[in-house]
Amino acid sequence: MERSKYWMGVDVGGTKMLAALFDQNFKLLVERKEKTNGREGAKAVVNRLQTLIVDTLREAEVSRKQLGGIGVGCPGPVNVNTGVVLAAPNLGWHNLPLRKKLETELGRPVLILNDVDAGTYGEYRFGAGEQARCVLGLFPGTGIGGGCIYEGRIMHGSANSCFEVGHMLVVPGGRLCGCGRHGCLEAHASRLAVAADAVAAVYRGQAPALRELAGTDLSEVRSRTLAKAIIAGDEVVAGIVHRAAYLLGTAAASIVNLIAPDVVVLGGGLVEALEKIYVEEVRRAITEQAMSFLGRPVKIRAAKLGDRAGILGCAALAADAFGGKKRKS
Ligand SMILES: [Zn+2]
Image (cartoon, rainbow, N blue to C red; front, top):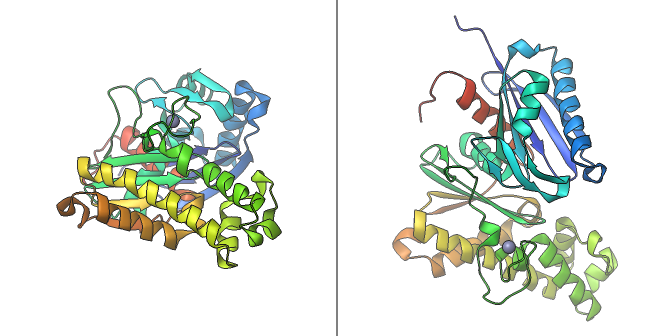
């Protein structure tokens, strides 16, 4: 009988990192959280990450030998062959050979993934993706992440992760994006863009409920605050959110025309707080803007796993890569 193995999934975010140990049936055994503190610099973040992994193993009383491998989701594009994180500005990482560093330190195989790819894979295997032939994941938050699982595999380039949905051009000549180009989806429909528009509405005296809840402090305008303001009757804020959700759906409609996903999974902070609006507007945009024979069959689903999509996806992908047996799909 094959000796049982354990798999670890780690999600490295801009503000926190989450590590979890799973058994071979992906039952969660131990989960630990740690602040990221990107301002401390790249090296300090990597050290924290290593400590978190070691502490998680220790808490579970699992030896390194029993660990089959680790999947690490990172907030930026990665080279999937070399395990180099190309850029993660929040963490101060630039061309960081993370796989090499972690494997040297921990002595176990490590898989480096883009966090949205990992989250989409998690939803594909265990959540709203229903193990469909083609799953498109869209995660509007501070930025807008996208991922695609096609016939059981992450769609990526021959070297680098891709599906940068947030940087699809949706408004020619539009707002300046963090990537340096104009008119990207993210510049018009991320939480940051929505919050900035909502604060402008507060300044114009058009959002009295939001004024009460957050004033004009951009950092106070979180997804849940927007939801509360809408419930309290701020119609202008509702309009801003509906427009952003529809714009996300417009980008989704173009993707539907190209690759005909069976399921579109919507996740991230904005969708968790404003699920009904997001599901409705993405549905409407796909109905109105995709070719009808491609748009009609698409299922639109809210993500089911929340924070756990990433760690589950990472652990399952590590098992796929290092488990020694091919998963039937
Ligand atoms: Zn951009």
